Amino acid sequence: MRYTRYGLVMTENLVATPPAAGTINIPGLVDEVLADFLATSTATLAAWDSALCWLADAARDAVLGGGKRLRPTFAYWGWRGVAGPAAPVDTVLPALAALEFLHAFALVHDDVMDASATRRGRPTTHRAFANLHTGQGWRGEADRFGDGAAILVGDLCLVWADQLIAASALPGHRLAAARACYDRMRLEAIAGQFLDLLGGAQPAWTVERSLLTIRLKTASYTTVRPLHYGAALAGAPPGDSLHRAYTGYGLAVGEAFQLRDDLLGLTGDPAETGKPVGDDSAGHKATVVSQLARSLAEGPDGDPTPSQTAAAVRRSGAVDRVEEMIAERVAAALAALDQTPIHPDARAALTDLAKIAAWRSA
Image (cartoon, rainbow, N blue to C red; front, side, top):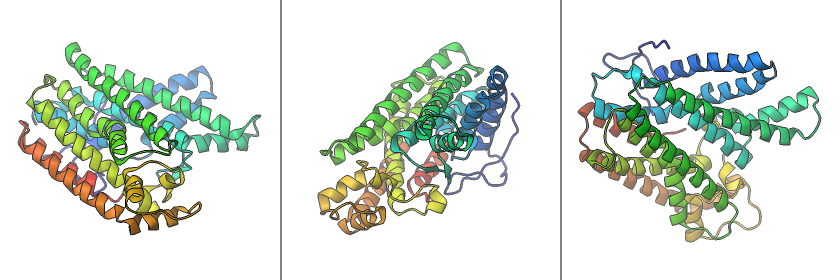
């Protein structure tokens, strides 16, 4: 694989800006790895049958169609906190990039379960396939075809994640240790996704259960396990003081990240978030903010519109309370970092990432 060196300055939306001396652009490097891998892997599918180009193209779009590259970034700093700034990143880049395939798998399946129409300002994978079905005049139900095709796109991304991890030039024992973190990450994400689904179906739910869902669905595979994964790639043993500090930091940042996501779903600008306001409330998701709103005040009568629901949530005081919860978690994350035996530049980067994840606008 080929890699080009970039500079990196993080903005509030975790995107790369022009090069700066002495820095490294993990999102840019990850994108190169993904593009190289996808060029070969999609060609393999196309060689079997030209119709598989639709599947391959959808998977490529799901992976390369935008995103913050947050999970590989946390994994990189988890690795660098142990390995130090002089360690060559090339050896771990495929393993870092694999987390984007896992993320694409989760998003594509999540959109099917939520019946979401847009993602990153474009039709979701299942909607794009439904539109293709209609446009081609095929038999059967377009929506059913779209859902089935999207599930297969997610499955394909999960397979490609496994292949990319195996491509890392690392000793077998390190890959095995990292793989254990990765497997736990997948298990927790699926468990959290089921609780998320269940929370929209069961009438009785609690703030505590919503927080558990966040820890499993979001914090695990966004922050906690990527940090553990990166540390394992560097050879750090599980269960030591570093592992515990990464856990405390990662749980706090992961919860803050999802709490911000919940607020953006109600109050964010669709031009920035890429999703309509009110998707979660329209789907009756049991988010922390919605649970707090129910506990603080009566909701609107009847079947409210998303804007009416958002207004009711604001009146309840739930938004202010969630903002307080986010600030509390950032403080807890930074306190955990103070106890973390890692290289100073990794500590500084993780401090910035905590603030970016908590107070982003998209």
